[in-house]
Each structure stands twice: as C-alpha cells, then as structure tokens.
Amino acid sequence: MNIINKFNSVTPERKSVTDTWITPKWIIDEIGPFDLDPCAFLIEGNPIVKTANHFITEEQDGLKQDWFGNVFCNPPYSDLKSWMDKMNKHGNGIVLCFARTETQAWQNNMSNATGINLIHRRIKFLNDKGEEQGNGNAPSALIAYGEENFQRIKKIKGIHCRVEK
Image (cartoon, rainbow, N blue to C red):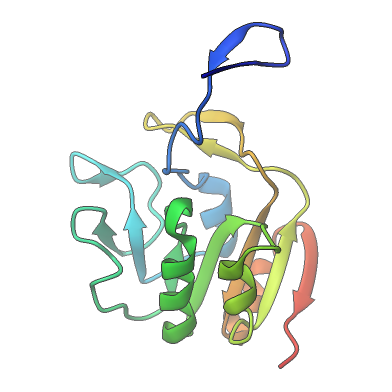
C-alpha cells in the first residue's frame, strides 16, 4: 500500500525505517560518563558515539546479559517495554526514549524511576556516519534511576519532574 506524503508524492507505507536511533554526542557530553551501554551501536567494533566504558551489542543481546554500574540505555524502540523492565530492575542509569507517556512500557516502569526530563526539543539522532539526521518522530525523554542520575538529566534543557512514590 502507498500513502500520499505532505509533499503530495507517493511513498511506500512503513511502520519505521529503523529501530536504531544513535544518540547525539552532546547528550553524552552533558550527562555522562557511564559504565555500560547495553544497546550499543558499533561499526567494526567502534562506537559512533562513546556512550560508555563498556558496550553490549545487538548480537550479544543486552537483555540476556548482566548489567553493572551506571547504565546508559537508548534501546530499540520496538521493544521498549523489555528494556525499561530491565532498567527498572537494575535501578541505576538513564534511559533515552520517545516520550510516549500513554504506553504500557512508560506507565509500568515509572514507579522505580527517580525523575524524568521531557527534553525541550526533538532530538536529531545520528546516522551510521555520525551525521545528524532529521528529528525523531516524537518528543524524547530522559528517565533517571537514582538521585545522581536525576541530577545529571537536569543539565539538559527540558521539563524536569521527580517521580513521586
């Protein structure tokens, strides 16, 4: 099936072009460093952006590995619930995800979060060459687990909220 886009040209219908949204360096510069990135995107063994000191790749499956230390997680958004569940249990880190507050993944995992930053603008994620792409298709949020991480996410402009238990 085809759809008419906003420029009145025909484009194929698609759910999503990619499940990989590479974190811009400026975010890590503001809120890092981290011990582990369980959703690392590497090319020939090297990260596009060094998000942490240790990486788990898609092939290694970060959901099946033990997490340690302070974790930065920009997960595949097609399975956000599983990644949020794992971070919720780990309890020390920051998740970067779309601010889809109506989803079960969001609602079920806020109880153990310390705070949220609803980022003030849409993020321009990176492509596999490290270049900015267009904006993400939704607003983004940083979800902090642990007080230190809540203080970190406040460094980025947005609406900062403490999660009440």
